Image (tube, rainbow, N blue to C red):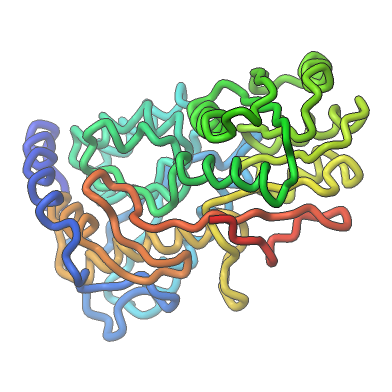
Length: 381
């Protein structure tokens, strides 16, 4: 039996808690998330053959490009695996939340009630992760997010939830250090859009800046008139602006700042680290911007592109390694994930007792000559 009834899933989740905690830190996963993916001899657990992984995140809307990057990494891993395992095919079901914590709960219910789904890559965003984590936990469905970074997600006790990316504390501290170090800023104005991801990242930056924090403000998702924020930035005397949010509003804010005469450094986090930032801001306004991410560029011969593609690829291959190891129930898969160690294309992977990745590097990407240079970031932590 692949999946449990709802009451049985609750028991499974409780059982998985103890198993996962005892398994964390073991030295061998029995599988890997290396660049070739999948089994080398076509052997796999027949119980999961023909079943599905699920992805939930934004595939359309303002953040849709980020979700499409994730799907690209997932599909690459599945293609490689299925090519090597013709008798054990694993497929993908996609659920487009548009990154909304209001839309995601209904999709989460669909996912946990689908007996063909044995694992989730996602959720893709922090707000939807906080809105659905309890549902997935109570159902006993293992999940690995390639991109949700809000610190509090892994503080909820949801032992089926994991992420293969550094959290906002790691990124925010590195961003603040860059701003006042290589960035040369002495007074930084911090702005966010009020979402869980954005507030978390911006809050860490503010705390880490200390006396270098000039002031802060908040805009709204979908806001197009940034004049009030620009006025506050200029009145503060700030020589740098940090924005916590996604590329659409980041681009509009950068454009408005330049049009308003602000000449200082503009920096944002991984929600903005996408070529669409330059398209929205315009090449002139985007020039010189610094966009950080807890993710390095993919290898030159990697078959998918964009931020989070490598994390999604690695997350998928962890599930496939569990399948090859003989896992056939949700608690077996969850235990395998908790004890997993390996070197993925995104870097070394091992999880702590809360589901956070143990090691993560933060990178700064630069807009140069009118485009985002995604190939030559600077490691800043």
